[in-house]
Length: 171
Image (cartoon, rainbow, N blue to C red):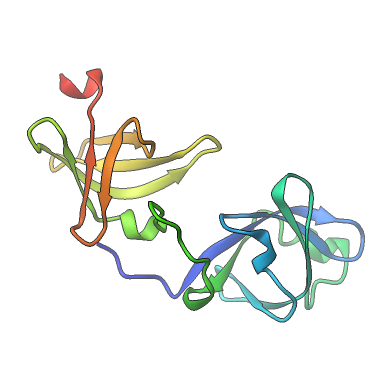
């Protein structure tokens, strides 16, 4: 299992909004209302900004004004950037929720006799679902959708994910 990072991704900057430096951001889980004036957000490069204002927008996005981002050009420079929060400020997880970093390093075993399939090396995010990237001991990789149809149980404390194989896995 991997060590908890100091900061976690909380927002993805989609694009500028308007001409005064506001940003249209996608919230990466949890209630968008948790982004409030005065909180600090960080770029993955360590840059820091203070939230001046935050409000909900259509389609679940968040409109943010950040200190030091005063023009559309300033905001355009942040397009495609992940904004992070300190680990302590991360959203509270519900039952059957995990942060991606908690899954990396877990052993994946099959419900068919407990056969070890490999270790989670990454979690890829797609619009429909997350996908576990699992590397077998021989180096072969497979991708397993992180959905109930395939994932029976995730036990972070035991270091294990139990999956139900499908036809191509049983060969």
